[in-house]
Length: 332
Ligand SMILES: [Zn+2]
Ligand SMILES: [Zn+2]
Image (cartoon, rainbow, N blue to C red):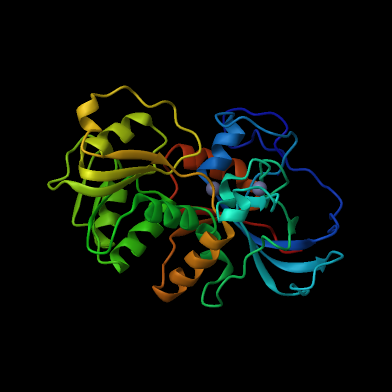
């Protein structure tokens, strides 16, 4: 399913189904036969043009689970038939100061799956062997797909929010990523306060152990030690900031935000901070998948056929997806 021109997602576009020859893996690459690919809000933002395309045509999709179909030259740690996962991080330079200091997510030369290189809205895709992830056996292919972006980035946001076990955490927005984050936070015995518009999501948050649920403008009953915003709306960042206790952090889990409105400095005073969360590292993926298997994190997803990728994106935009959407190619 290829994006050639950005536009509003509707049931018949803008992605187009095309037939292409099966790609072959180059040096250091593996070819995956895709069994499942999760649909992320970033895919929607790219398709609709909120996130500027870096290359067109492009195959979106960066929560990929598949089987190794072929191994390129120089690859020794993957064998045909093994299960592999691919995430947003497609390639880094490996040499810059950020790559060498555990911050490869900030590499200026990093390339991203489904943005710079073709992703997983396809039957086959080629990924770099050194960024491919091993997925714990306890997860099925469908369960694993939503973990590979929403899960991992939620985990990174939790870490960078500085929230400590037992503290009070706010989650603003309660889609696929927050669904994973709340399970980790509860595992850390955090008290979780969830703000979302959707009554269905509030109900789910309660079931997953939230101590309080409300809307974006409702003030949680206690000040928060940390908050993560998932909603791609700047107003929500200000709501989260106003709910913070002294010294607390708002972590913004969004690659694209409309804007951050101005707010009184008193909201930031007392060493409160706002920070963005950009991409993930291989270590995030590894650490998260291990923890997710231990807890275990349970994903909520709805499966759609690959050909229905446009409908999946449209429904994600309209808030009409229950948990995560996962695309599955028709078996041949
Ligand atoms: Zn680098
Ligand atoms: Zn994503």
